Image (cartoon, rainbow over all chains, first blue to last red; front, side):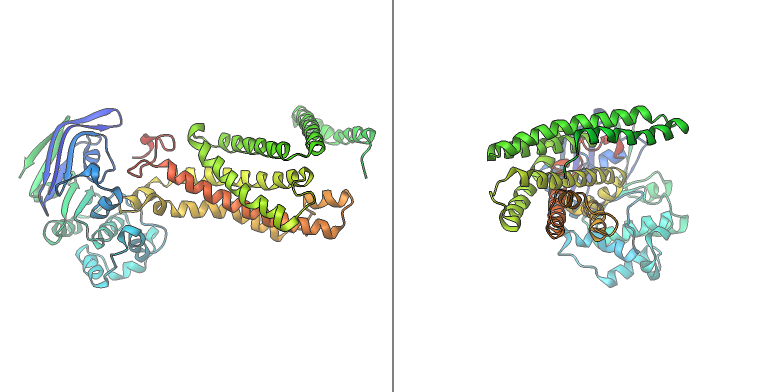
Length: 214
Length: 263
């Protein structure tokens, strides 16, 4: 369970949002929409301490986010960027990168799970031996999501995950996020299909966060 | 053999060659050339005077005092080549230079060469000049490279910390590149030594009457000392830079990366 209750949310000196109240239940799926520059990403970044410019409180499973070590937190709350960095080698190596970090030492790559995830994201197993710079934008996004899921996060932060996907694949990814993924999801998306499908929808209008659905 | 003052003055005649070429090809290089030569003469005259006194006094206080001034000049040179605030960079540069000095120089003096007397300024100051000068250049290059990598590969760094990496883990490849970049040319330089040209120190020693065997031994020793000092200084300065450049959320401080350049 995540609670974000803010008087103000800043980006640098600028106030983006006022009186924010956003709750994500355990395993809940929340989609967040709003215009470019309205503060979607800044709001999402309060959850992995990438943005500490706010007054109020952010609680993650009862703990004040300010008391959590950023490494520990980001091992539980994983962000997938819109244009993720996957390294310069093969896809297999790109997936292995986070497993080399000290905080993830206890985690291992489970080949069966990897196969299953690739399938859920409409990717062939042979993609593992392809070089990263040969991938399309949509393949990169999906590999980054597979990589994040391999880390078994408690919360997944997604930034426009369907922006480079065609309709069929977008549907499959959406289905995975809503029905096959046990993690809580906070997803920034302007895609109406995604907004309709998510059980909880918040939108930024001006400097106010509005609960649209749920 | 010494050069007579009159002879040295006559060396100015050789300048006719570049001056004529510059005039002929309209290179506009006469002024900068003469300015540079004048500057060199003044600087060398001054340092010659300082060295005369340092060698005459030859006390630990004067020798160490001069070494500290050399470190100060090196720190100044490194920091002015970077586009980061002085207050921020000072410890990042000064401690690694001091540390590598304290490791490499005593080893050179007390273990390898064992000059008599031990703290002979005539021995320490030129050797230290070479060790420090090389450390200075490499450190400036490595820090510059590391800093520009953080800026240009910001997404790479961010992706890593967003998956639980510590700053040290997330900057591992930048560090690797910076250290390699400062060591590779040195390794090549060492392997080509003596084939094309005699290194400056060796030539100097041979000209002043030392046997080639002595000059070679000194050259081998100094190259190894330089590589050790360079590696240690570069490694420590990158370590300190990494430790200092990020806030408690592992995001770079505004001194290092403008927050506007992050998104």
